[in-house]
Length: 53
Image (cartoon, rainbow, N blue to C red; front, side):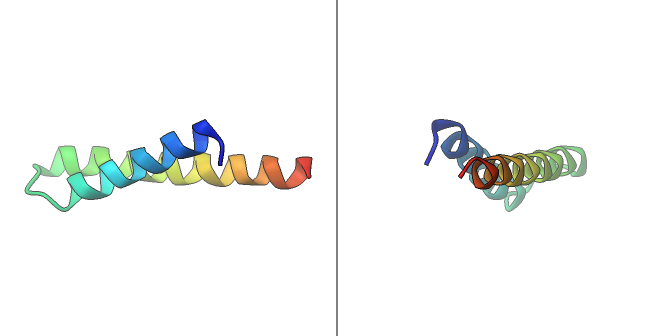
């Protein structure tokens, strides 16, 4: 697993953990956007890897 992919997975986990806490709505939405971005980035990287193989 690439270093970038590992970083993205850590960001997703951090955002998921934070979203389960008692955050104000604006912060929870921000974490939701971070999770969405990380998921999209992971999918993009996996697609690039698949195409390279």
